[in-house]
Image (cartoon, rainbow, N blue to C red; front, side):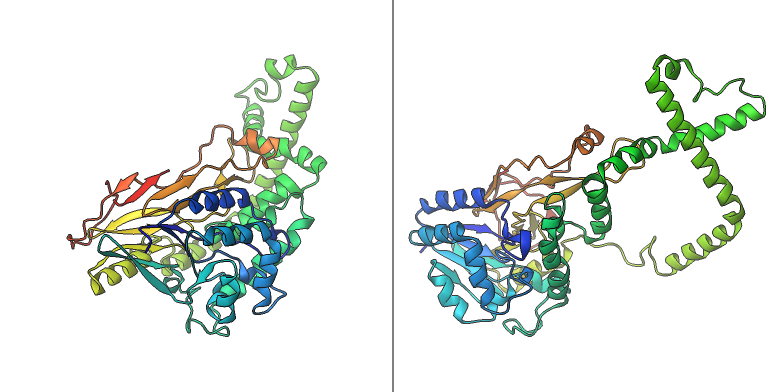
Length: 442
């Protein structure tokens, strides 16, 4: 029987088009090779190892066959590792078909992968249980109404197949394969901004972007130009301090170009201002009515207090702890946010994701789209949590790097290096924890 358990989830490997390219293949295979030497351990992949929903032109068991052909090195390493260390694979929502076809069990067994077609499983550590699931059952868009039924797909399947799968196929046509990262954009309400950003910095014609860039950078100065014109017109200023100042004159040709840009900015701002004057009253009435409508729907002031993003998973953990006092640790994935929290003296752990995550960073100045920096947080839990370092690719353009030079990314909530589970406590607190058999070395 294994004495140590390792957990990973949400790799989403495979799919149509550029989705077949795994950004972390080297790191994952290296991790499996290291684990291969750890006798007495078991690797548990708690869902979404594969992106079967992203195979949109294949049906049923054909998807796994295509996946094996796409990832020969990975499956060969599974086979080698599985000869020494047990590998348990659970279905998630993106690879839900794994729960639906019995023949998958035998096919994956050829690579020493033990497929368990269950929503949740348990393991035992030091006389206590570890509850393990993917977590999709607590997400209304991805809940399986009849787990194991291939025809009972949730709404998330149709969204993924129609949007993410299509993005994988069309990604090869872009300047870089950025479109395939659509599946990792969080929250999904950021998708329009993310697409505008990638269009501006990657797809837009270089000459057009070069022409627009100074105007967008200096757009706010256009209103100052208009203000300076007004102050000159009423006699408060004898000269225009923005268009006619010693600094721009000293720059020679560069200064002339800068003055020309500012002049155009001022004219655009003036035209915008003049266009808004006759529309001010009807626009004001419309805006007031829209705000009243949004208030009726509690958009700005929610009727009920906002819940934590992982509230439904913490509630599910509480229910499991209440139903079985021997469960000391609740492990899930699905949301792609690695975390460790305490609930009533027990521990709730999210195993995060291995996907490349686009993180939004606002630009230093100007009216420009935000930049999405690529970030990896490759991690595994070993009833100790580990993080594997991976430098993101140098895919940002020079303008993206300059415009976000001093911006720092949010690394996410830190996970303590060691956490001790005191399962004798039975309160309902949710806190950061200090010292367990669950270790983390971020």
